[in-house]
Length: 463
View 1: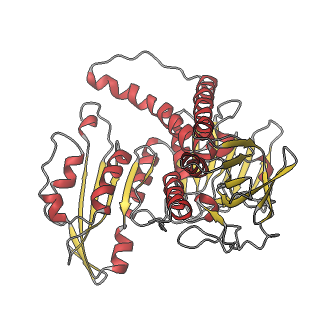
View 2: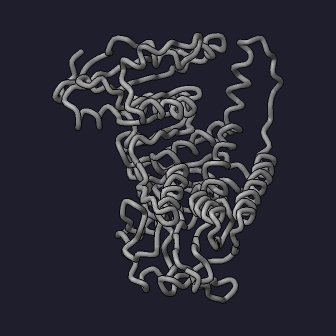
View 3: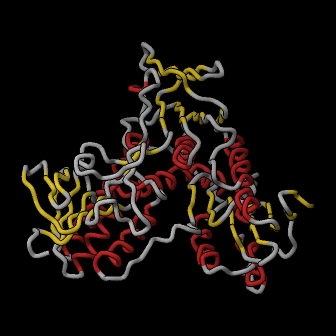
């Protein structure tokens, strides 16, 4: 390795790339990392972090309304979009500096440049017009919102990237897509007072989540005033003389809005990086193919995170980075475990889920027990808000192992993180039953549902 400039060169300064660079540098390795945009990547700069801040902002109207039931008189409130954007920018800049500083503090060298691989051991830094050599190369360039070039008028649309920094808050918006990004932004904009329509080609929002959660969230969003059109796609977007947009939907509807946001999936960032030239194998959509240890078909080149299109979640990229360090630099081959990953959808109400949905469990297990509770949480009793909470456990009727846990309601994401531990450990419903409840909490339902709501044997529901 002494013949190279670096023991490890990382391309991509997001959560996964920065973690790998920082930990490798802390081990005494000579590390370089290049990021062409801003350190922190999608999550910190234009994803999870600013999104959660905007979720918080959008929840205040409901908090103000609920306060009356608890004796508070709240004056008429007003919202300043510009102030939210500016405050978000300050926080993002603070976090960006920390990400960069952490690498440098560990002894790594950071570059603000696009990087191109010109040889399995050679990286060209375009901003500096020079090349560096490295024994090991890690690609962690993430992904970006999928464009829709076939849509007439797509140039008038925005993605989640631009949604955070609009010059002004739209009066009306159409969000196309049914995944967690589309659903979260529909709730954000609606909470901020925007007339919001969600357009989705599928039969129900949030595919791959448990159907009970999907249906209840759909119903709740519509009661709040969000218009949801399923089995629908936009056919064209036309700009009007007054600057507004007419979105023509395949069902004949024409939506006149100020913004059209496309949230129709994400694609890997692998273009113009020289990957084809060195013979790196990729999928049809441009994702880098890797083995279970995140190694590509070229022995010294690795890839982690969204660019591999395995599980597109920030904590997964970080976990893959740590496994890469164990494998590449500690002599301890470690494959990332992509099973039983907890996740959250920061809708309103939010979703927290871990493990198998009911439909998936039925496909793989002949005897399933479903424990289900739907109730109005205590926080809504005095406020009068007509909004229910759902808790559901999916259990293997033979082994009693808890296969899935699904929550819709306040703090569902926090609960999912904690539920991930017993499900990852393979605990049973009997272990849940032996656990004392914390009262009064919503989460106590998870350990007090003693009798199955229904069973599913050989694909047939038995009430």
